[in-house]
Length: 321
Image 1 (cartoon, rainbow, N blue to C red):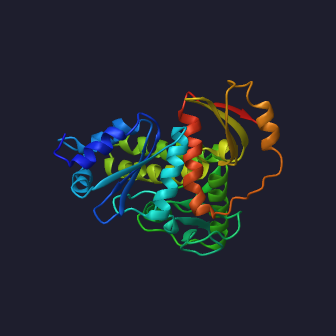
Image 2 (image 1 turned 60 degrees about the horizontal axis):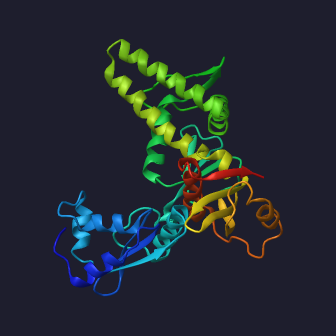
């Protein structure tokens, strides 16, 4: 461990081996970094090791004057609290989740011979607007590289297209057929898989003829297209459902009523799952006193946290209601 002040040593010793959020504070009282952990003491101590893994950590520890922490019942709550603090405080050393105003949408355009897809700042209806997406640059790269495939036409259990060195200008008939294909691909997982399979077949075919540059281009297209499909379809079932989850905690079990990826009610129960959910479910389904008022650009990060915790944790029991 590097040489640190007695004040920081005391704070490190005060940290519990419990889930929660920690805040790194500079000499002026500014929160410069917010993090979370399943085990606060173990995680925070790693910042003060002699050989930090990242240059950002090396720069940050030099200006840490104090550490504050908040204990939570579960890791999921720690992640959600971390997200909330990052969005409100915007600490200088945090990079993710604090710039949700910059998230963007993908729009399927009306007839335009040179542009089938575009990036917009806010949702324009639900039918032909997709998102939000965190990375404007990757979305823009995907839009540009897809132009070289147009027109994409529906074929028997697949799609037909060719790569053009320069994007082709589309007449209205080709544009509309291309638009229909894009809509299918963006809204139907089976169609999306067909499209990616055809891209993969073309990549393998180019490689078999030693056209490695062209094969690399198809590989890049696949990576970018997968970014769009993953952003639209990730956690689809969970993000559209109502469910009760039960997580073991120190003094029993923490129950959560989750609707469309958002926690609307939670409480501690002494009983194990599923004996603990009957009364909680009945209470959860009654009208709520509070309503979540948050736009979807902010909500996307919270929903992703909840859904990823449910998917990744073997400790979380789930019942769909």
